[in-house]
Amino acid sequence: MAKKCDKRGKIELGKKSEEAVATWLRGRGYIVLVRNFRCRFGEIDIVARKGDVMHVVEVRSRKVGNAGVDKVEGEIVQAISRVKLRRIRMTAMVFMNSHGYGSIDVNVLIAAVSWYNPRRFRVRIVSVW
Image 1 (cartoon, rainbow, N blue to C red):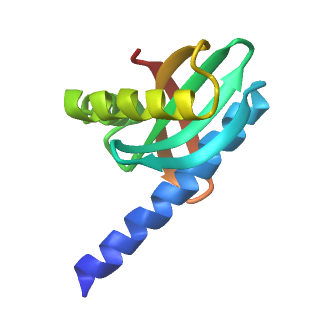
Image 2: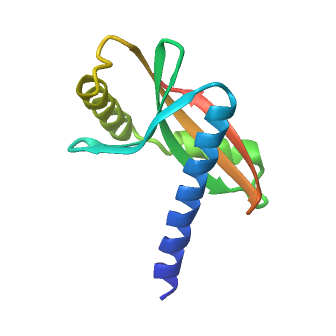
């Protein structure tokens, strides 16, 4: 039973983190176009546009606890494998081509969300492609 509750908690944290990142992006002038885009290659958490650049965002989150926010954010970014990045890129290309954005520059971002408590968090964006 504990594992089921654990999984449910992770799903809720993931949804809460995606919403926090979408709000964070909007507050900085990004236009959030799509959330949770899926195709046969994978899923993109958020697709946003700012100016002439499309931003594909993979959202990852952790509870900070006693580890310290910098350590947690580093672990979040390092936890994304090359295979996952390749799937994100392929999924991004499917999105771009299927929505008529084939000629726009694409930037893949990792949004590391560090939760201090249920109401306090920090978002760090890292460009990976």
